[in-house]
Each structure stands twice: as structure tokens, then as C-alpha cells.
Amino acid sequence: MNIMKKISRCAFLIIVVLLFFSFEACAPTTKPVPISEPEDSQSNPSPTLIEPAAITVTVVEPTAIPTTAPVSQPTPSDGVERITIEELKTLMDRGESILILDARPRDSYYLGHIMGAMSFPWKPKLTLADTEEISLSKLIVTYCDCGPGEADGSDVARQLMEMGATNVKTLAHPSIEGWLELGYPSQ
Image 1: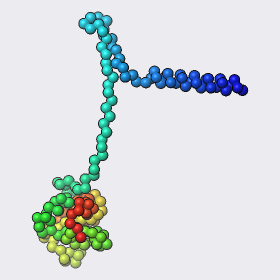
Image 2: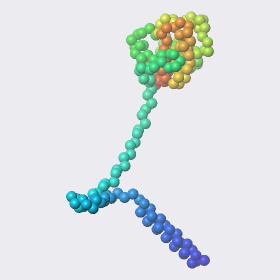
Image 3: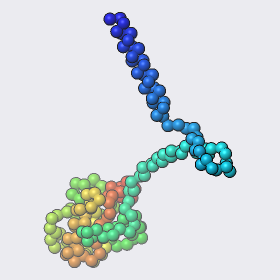
Image 4: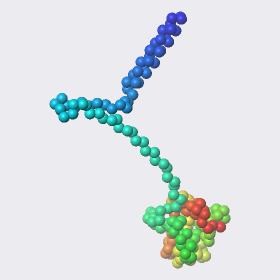
């Protein structure tokens, strides 16, 4: 029994050594590899050496997700033009006459909204009675917190356009979250 253990250990060591040398033989070389010139070339009797190519690894750092939408946004398929946070802020700073409608539920509106915005919660179908307090002839900007599609805000804007509003835009994503993140005036 003692001899069997010794043979097993020896066999194991032999296998380990053979594996070590086989991996050594397969390992990439970092030494130049000579390349022979054709036999008839007498201009350079020594072989040409080729250096191994260096491997370049490029690490790409993740970029921050922009908090505001690009300035010139095409009108999405819902037919409602988007306005960026910066564009709205610029218009407000210039004192432009804008009606800002917060299409979120009232409880969200009371937790914080764009300065001067009016609570105008989304409804599946607006009526003329819903629009009695607003002027359909001035610039109207709607917003919600629905994400990239601005679903509620753009739906309110679309319904207002169907009711005769001529200058309606929806605040582009990230909408109210982006506005508050930038520290712009809010109530």
C-alpha cells in the first residue's frame, strides 16, 4: 500500500511537470522572431528580426447621462413639439408670456413644481370646461414625470391643440426631474 501511494505521488508530479513544460512551450514569446531572407539575397546576410506587436487595450470611461435634452429636437410621432429645460428657462428669464401646465396628479404638483406652473392633471378627454381658465392663444408648455415619451404632458398638449391652441410644446425629458435637479425656480 505504501508503494502505491509513492507511485501515485510520482505520477502526479510527473504530470504536473509535463503540464508546466507544455504550457511553457505554448506561451507567447516576447523575443524577436528571426525571419530568413531568401537564399539568393546577398545584400543582407543576417536575418531580419520582427518585434512582437504590442497589444493595446483601450478603456472607455462611461459618460454621464445628460440631464437635459438636446436643443433642437424633432417633433416626435405624437405631433407635439418638445422644448428643452434650457429653452424654457431662457423664455422665463426673458419674461415671455408662457402658460406652464403641470399634467401630473395634484399630489405630485403640491410636492414641487416649476415656478408659476398651474396644476392641470392629465385626463383621457379634455372638455371646454377644463380650458376655461387658460388662454389657448399664448405659448403653452406642458410637462409630466412620465419618462422619455412625456406621455401625459404630450397627450394634454395634443388635446389642447385639437381644441384650438396654436402654440403648444411639451417639456422634454427629464422634464420636472431635470428642472429640479438643476435647481431652477420651483415652488
